[in-house]
Image 1 (cartoon, rainbow, N blue to C red):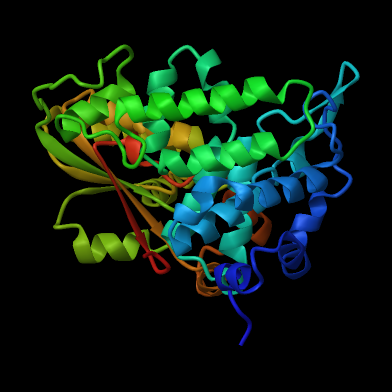
Image 2: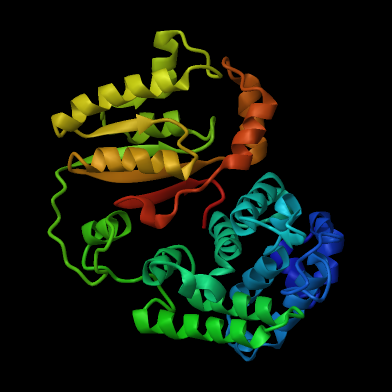
Length: 377
């Protein structure tokens, strides 16, 4: 039986070479150029190999638990996978805009579609994706308008002490003109995270309502204690088509009214590929009736893009609702099998594009975010 990726990493002494041989997508990092001002060592592959080596040399490495070491090494190996999709030359310099965001989605897509080979639980996979997403933060957080806000948001998804180690190895695993300054910023990040009380765990807000408001209301102090003014519950479903949203509602919906975009589309005779704005507008008009009545309901749609979810969350919360996001996920092969049996077959290229765009809900997005997956831990 072929060993899974975390087991393989440990059994092969945390070898980046072994990973590249057994997970060939890492070979895409070869010959991807970088700005020599920050990466005099060469291409992205060379840099990644150095980062993995430096990670093992860190004094804090030995203090980590077994799984933490494996996940952190995996994140280091894939931390710049996004550069393979976005690296370009601009004004004579090589740049990789938004490579951390692109990398998060790319790793999630690879690990989801190749779940049998990776063997990661949902929690393990999402820990690695978020380490990839935020790995540049410790170097640049101080240049942002709200560094405290950014750190608290990141801490909702990953332990910042792991992010610190990944960033430290990232800075050391390169040949740069001014590496000392970057290392100083990473240490400053660690000090600030400890000062905020989010080094090990997310911040402990006064209550869930204050937590929600902090991440959705500009300028709120994180130590505030707000009175919970919510009056009723709204469940916002999220997940790829065929993930099991309808089945979950049938079993757990507690007879709450359901606003289904698929049903509205059928009622209006609108093709899934056309005029989605008309369908969403009709759904929102239905929702506003329930919202004005302070009546709980379920919003049933894919909602795989964070921006789409946040528009709905703000709308519902504006009427005093406690919004609960429920994310459902089914294994990739099961998704394909269900699609073959489905009356409304989804073209494969459409399904693949949705997987490419998928943004799993982050814990800060609503009053509560829950995951219901077949591979969850």
